[in-house]
Amino acid sequence: MSQARTQPQDDPAKVAAFEARIAAGESIEPKDWMPERYRRQLIRMMSQHAHSEIVGMLPEGNWITRAPSLRRKISLIAKVQDEAGHGLYIYCGTETLGVDRAELVQQLLDGTAKYSSIFNYPTLSWADMGVIGWFVDGAAIVNQTVLAKASYGPYARAMIRICKEENFHKRQGYEIVAVLANGTPAQKAMIQDAVNRWWWPSLMMFGPSDADSPNTAELIRWKVKRRTNDELRQRFVNLTVPQAAAVNLTLPDPELRYDADTENWHFGPIDWDEFNQVIRGNGPCNRERLEARRRAHDEGAWVREAASAYAAKQRAKQASEAA
Ligand code: BYC
Image (spheres, rainbow, N blue to C red):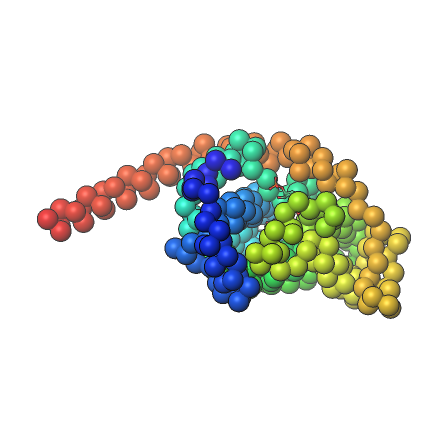
């Protein structure tokens, strides 16, 4: 990746010392020596994560003006604002690796950086707000609770705070789900339809199966990832099946059954063709999402200019006071 700081070939002695620190469970901090490949992998993963939070505001932002009550509107606005905060927090964490945020944002706008596949699906009804909180934030919690133990300190610490907020997001979603599931037949049908549409894309959030995941082995070795994609996906399914039963909703998988030997819920095959289409930019809303981000970036140019002018003025003031 062009944005990573270039370094001479990593010194094998330094690599060995670094790997010993990882093996001992030490946290790697921004000023510590790290292999160039470790830095690049973190920049890739963290920037994609930050982009996901920012693009992830769009499907829900679409429903703020149509929330069914003042109370629902307040909590949805708060959730979407939290997502902006998560994005900015993770961009800051990524900058500790020596890369400029403007460069990362440009990669998103150019379509050269990925963001989570899940945000390329449309939000068709209010019930989707419930199911996103339940499934999407639920999946994020499963993934991020483990990332809170990642070997890179700034990323791990960001995850601790973010997970606390994701817990509120999941609860607000599940509460919407429970209310609709116990509502009129039309409300129940609406929530079941949302469950049917979001279930499989939510399982895809965890990434390709381990056999097809080029980055997992290296990231596990460096303790950035502490569990594989398939392990986390299985954990999410195991947690979610009883939650669906508790509100009498059906998950759209005829193969779903409990396996007493493995103590896991067995689930049917994932449509990897669909996943690959979405991450290549051909999902239902990829174009719309990037257009919305580009428009917001252009419309926000004056804010960035004003903030830079203000910062320059403050610097000049401080310099003249110090003189
Ligand atoms: N979507 O080797 P793999 C949120 C890419 S936002 C798109 O397994 P890795 C929220 C992958 O990047 C939460 N692309 O990769 C916000 C790689 O491509 P490149 C978002 C995907 O890194 C608002 C290639 O496929 N969470 O919670 O080992 C509202 C091969 O994959 C996806 C994060 O970002 C995907 N689903 O593992 C509500 C968590 N999956 O870069 C909620 C942090 C894979 O080689 N990230 N790809 O071109 C991770 O944990 C890991 O990066 C992943 C992938 C598990 C996602």
